[in-house]
Structure formats: C-alpha cells, structure tokens
Length: 178
Image (tube, rainbow, N blue to C red; front, side, top):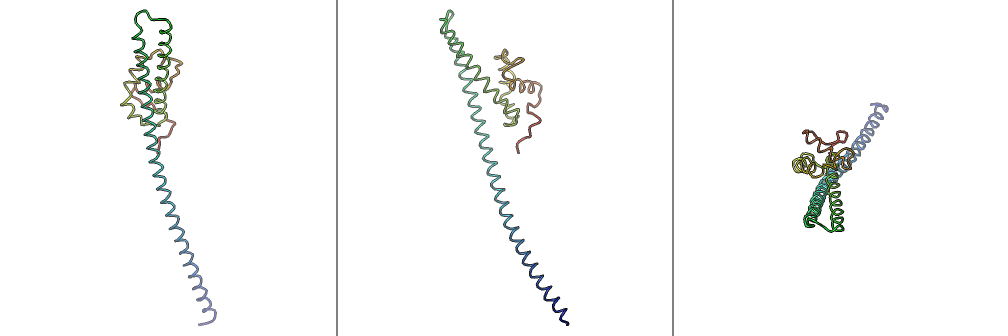
C-alpha cells in the first residue's frame, strides 16, 4: 500500500468520524426540538382549554345578564300594575322612566347575545334552541316599536330575520373558532 492510499484511508476515516459526530449532534438537536414542540403542543392544549372555560364563563354571565334584565323589566311592568286607575303624575312619570330603562337594558343585553351569535362567539345551534322563541316571538310581540327600520338593536333584527327563514345568522366572513 502506498503512502497516498494510506493517507486516503486516514483522511476517509477522519471524515467518517466527523460525519458521525455531526449526525450525533443533529440527532441531539432534533430530540431537543421535538421536546420543545411537545411542550408547545401541551401549552396550546392548555390554552385552548382555558379559552373554552373562559367562553363558558362569558356565556353564563351573558345568560345571567339576560335573566336579570328580564327580571327588572317584569318589575317595571308590575310597578305600572300597582299604580291604579288614576295614578299620581309623579309616580306615573317615575314608573315610565323605570320601565324605559328596564326595556333598554333588556334589549341591549339580548342584542349583545345576538352579536355573539353573529360573530360566532357562541354556538348558534345551541342558542337557536334556547332563544328562538324569545328572539323570534316574544321580543317581536313585546317590543315591535323598537325593532323596526333604523333600530338601535340591529343584531336582534338580523338574528330574528335569519331564524324566521331557517337560515344561519352568523357572519360568513368570520372564520369559526378552532
């Protein structure tokens, strides 16, 4: 064997060792990257779960607000019933003011729910089952004068019209949550 061949063997062996070391380093780096990705995936799942819990809490708060607003509206109607046939003008004005405030609070709260439906912040099908009668029948009957052209509650009208026609009320330009 010549010196040239011996040098080629030594050089080839050295390159094989360097390549092996590079493969070992790359393997360790890939293993570390895989652990990081697993950590990111776990954190992502935890964040998604926290978002679900947050959404549930927001929905509970919204439903509680609707119930409370409905209660105050019912109280305002009851106040009118206790005024009698010839009420004191001041008591009548006071009862009217309370009723107007209760109506506005109630309609604002339901409009907020309708906004959440349109923006896909809540599951439309669940709310359609639970609130269709309220939005499509009760509000139209009780608050017709507030829900016409130029209404301050356009989201109620949008959901009501969509659900009356058995269509979805969600905005198609908004992507569903993942």
